[in-house]
Image (cartoon, rainbow, N blue to C red; front, side, top):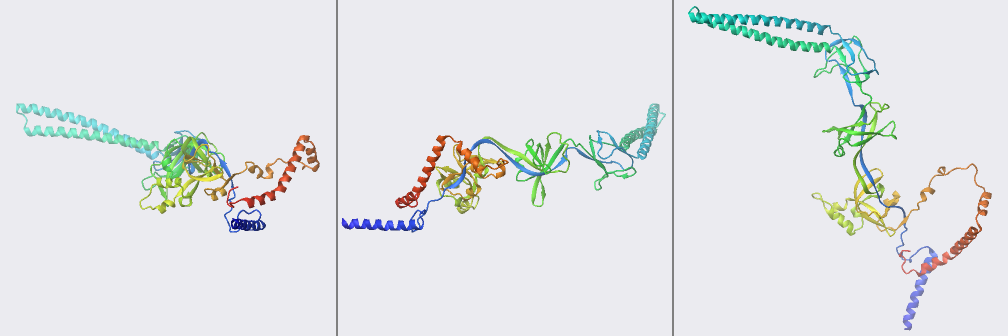
Length: 494
């Protein structure tokens, strides 16, 4: 019995000596000299609860402002310009005469063709008379043959003459049709000497003068462009949508247009056309997309550059979090818990993909506040916008999620202790320029007056509070020493 007491006493003395040595080295340290793990310091984080809101997913594409209706005016015939009736910037109505060409050649050809038509008509009348005479002669010979006064050869010749007269008449009629068609073409050429506006609008560009010779365009040779007319009241954006986004774009979707000249006030519009085929520029494939701009926008000019933002998807009344609350971590960097093992089992493997490849995949996770401890949890995300992301699976509406700061989220791990960041810290971090300024700083006398203006009960309460704080400070070292020596587990949580 006495030996056992001596052993216990020896152990207590040794423990007291070790604890005393540690306290002397660092009174604030918990643990013995053989480097036991110390408790983790809680991370100050911003905690938020999910909201139910509307999320709109958008895609962006570069674009250029252009007119909805714009026409390049060119001549359809060769001729010399005799008159120009418009100037650059002038408004014109549809069918307004813009330019006149020399019409003498076209008028002469038309007059010649009319004369030919009259000649053919006269020839047709003569052929009709010859055919009637040939038919009468043939009938007369047939009657004479019944009496024996004509030979079969004479009858055959008469019938041949009838066929020739009939053919001559048909030939005249075909020629008349040809000349009438040529006449129509000549009349068109004569009309084309007066070039009119195909649309109502403004003369944007004018590149013709009186006396110039203009030519008509052919397959291999472009014609002379005289001017350009456009409707400046209705504009659209011609954008190039990347091939990775074009499957989400369809006609009728709403869009916003951000101009380089005024990015703070976007314009609204609607998708009007998506090209069925793409075009390749270098290694990039894009699809031409037209967006009609709502309303009249007189301040817009064709050729302005813009950025298009098209609303492609929308979820209403859905569970959302701030986008920074969802982080991506590799599976192998996460704790080997059942929830992450289940996530790995649900992932489809590509042909030839090993388990090591699965562990290298990124997992979208959130950190949920579980009684002051961060719990990593995989989530299924839906669509997102610039501020919030849809959480389709893995989160309850009443749970708290770590949403910042960024550095804390980047370093946060499963099991780390958490501490809620004070809400008024943001107010304290604001620059002094945000605080209202006064003409004169407060003096000590003003502070004294403020203190004197307190009620007597408040003064007594302040004094008692100060005494309690002083007593607490005096007793703090003793409490620390007592806690250090009495704590049997140096790694225990406070």
